Each structure stands twice: as structure tokens, then as C-alpha cells.
Image (cartoon, rainbow, N blue to C red; front, side):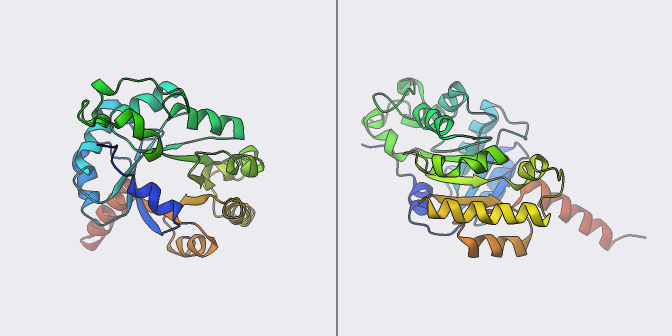
Length: 255
């Protein structure tokens, strides 16, 4: 029996539109609520949310029965982090702050068993192989791992063509918030200069043959990014939705 098909990877490689949501509440319970909402993909954020391996595992388990694809955003490009997340069952990872093609190649190598890469073999202990229940996991896993890399600095944008040339990178995710800070506009990703760079980056990624993704809670920007060629877009976060809903309800009953 081979490794399970990565439906999200297949969808973005075919450029089918995927609408997603960011999960930062670090809870399997809230993750399952999001899975019931009908999103195509859900990002378990381990970069800026208080997630560790047990919490990520709980959310992967909560999402498993649902069609929504789980994507885990790591804190960095460390190969040991990638190995742990893959072994607990993540099939698609998002790695932040990628700034050159060589860095992207190292990320891809960390997701592949030898001879294609350097992922350590511990499948007999891993949820990813259903604890050795998938007999052909090691032989088939490489093809089903999805790799998304995030460009979010001027250096990252400058290297887009080099990153696009890396085999095994399935999609490039543009990060407007960090880009805005790097460009001298911290906290203002809507600045015209930032948005111009974002749209140019999307065009370059698409021209380079890679799927492009982004996060925004602005509906107009969602439409603009989809029209520009993004195929996987996250349209908000669980924290943002909860905060807005709580404030709106309280305002309804304001004195």
C-alpha cells in the first residue's frame, strides 16, 4: 500500500483554486470547528502561534476525517523540525523566510528520503506511515510531500526565479507583512509600493511555473490576488474571525 495521496498538492499543481484559513489558536477543538466550515486548506501555524509538536499532532488528528487539507507552517527551515512534522503526519509544509534557491533546495532535501534527500528514516515509529501499517510508505512518500516556501523580504523576491527553478518546490507563498517591514513600511502591507511588489511577485512566480499563494483578510485583495494568478489563498485566521465575531456581538448589546 502506498503513501496517501496529497490532494492539496495535486490541486495546486493543477492550479485549481484553493481557499484557506489560518489556524493560530493552537487547539484541536478549534481546528475541527474550522474543518467543518468547508475550507479547502487550513494552515497550522507553528511560526507565530504557540504550537509545539504535541499540539500540531492534536490538530492533524482533528483535521484527518475532513476534506480540508492540513498545511503546517514551521518556525524555520531547520531539517530536524521538518523531519518531526512529517513523521507526525503532515504531508504539506510551509517554510518561512526563504531567500535563495539553495535554501529552497535544502528544504526540499529535508522532506525526501535518500537518495533524493536527507530525511531520516523512522517510519516504523511514525504516524505518517500509520506506525508501519503502510508497507510501501518509504518507497512512495517522497512523491506525496508538498513543499511550499515563503518569500517575504526583498532578498526573497529578488531570488524568485532561482527558487522557481528548484525541483520539488510545489508552491511559493508571498508574505506581504514582513515584506512591508523590510521595505520600510512596518504594519502597512496595504501600502501602494508594497502591493505593487506583491503583484509583480505573483506574476513572476506564475511565469516561473510555480503555484502561488498568499494570506489576506481583505476581500478586495483576495479577488485581486486570485485574478493575478494565485491558486491558493488564505482569507483570514481563526483568531481574526473569533475576535471580530466577539466584538460584533458585544457591540450589538452596547449600552
